[in-house]
Amino acid sequence: MDAKADHSAEAEGLRLVRAFLSLPPDKRAEVIAFVEELVREQGRPEEGNEVSPR
Image (tube, rainbow, N blue to C red; front, side, top):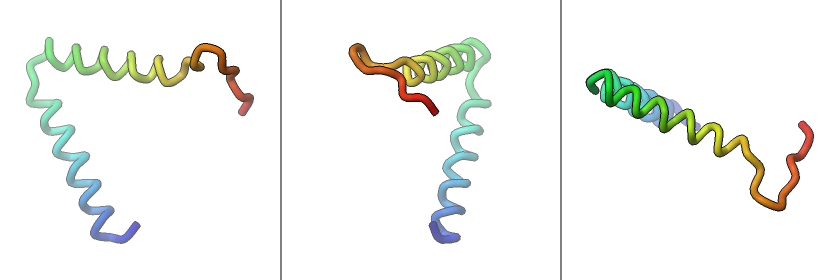
């Protein structure tokens, strides 16, 4: 990745953080709960698939 792409990704991350912080506390809690659920779903193996050892 080149320097321009690094700056673009950094700027996008900062925009996301700024947007998150501008939310009211109840909406922030909803976002956090949603992200936690996504993480839990990613950690679960698909039905019929086995978890591969790391």
